[in-house]
Image (cartoon, rainbow, N blue to C red; front, side):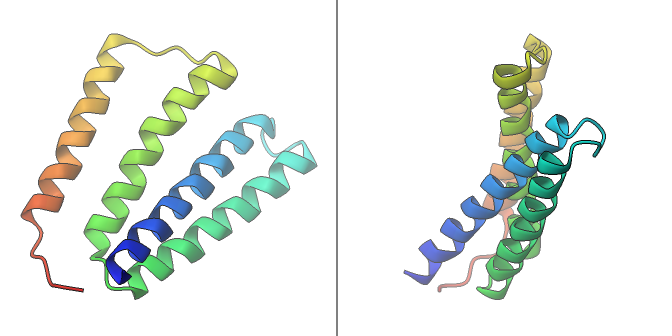
Length: 114
């Protein structure tokens, strides 16, 4: 159950980080108060949750790698959906390489029960 908690906390941290980044886009260079405040709160929540993941014992390389990789892919895809940011076929190759890299880091990491 503790192992699952780490992953749920990491998923929540990713959701907060992605939400904050998308709000940052809406803040128009931090000129709009609402999206700017949301960005700050979302980023703070993301870091608090990420810290809890690390406290639960997930290796920092795994936690940060998954957090950053999923964040990059989600922000790019949601940027396309919400803001019309262009996605290219080469970007999808990059997404696949990011995923492969995270899997290799996870597979290569020493695992301890719990």
